[in-house]
Image 1 (tube, rainbow, N blue to C red):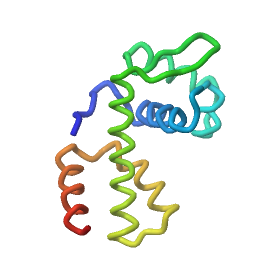
Image 2: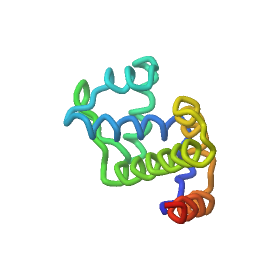
Image 3: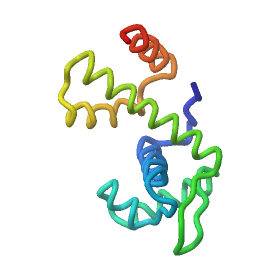
Image 4: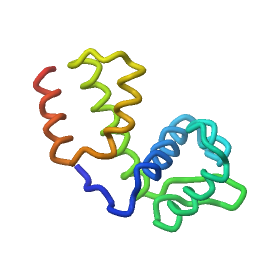
Length: 128
């Protein structure tokens, strides 16, 4: 389990996760795609993409495609893994409806420690 980068905010993790999810669906990811996906403004996306590019998580061709670097892909995959794991626990174990589980998982994925995530993973594996 990868350690959380101290410079990453919850918001930046959301942007990185969005790029990861969108890149799985399409070879080309653009500012507009991210804005629509996250329901945020293009200037917000622009600021986040610039920060993530400066931190080495993204590559961005001006007015063009946005791509994950290997480090960005690894980090985003880890965020998505945490998200899915928490959502699965909320739905399968606690019987939370999918909409609430999705919303709560999106918030919880940013604050749970790697140790707790690992224990949650182990618990769910034992449950089958």
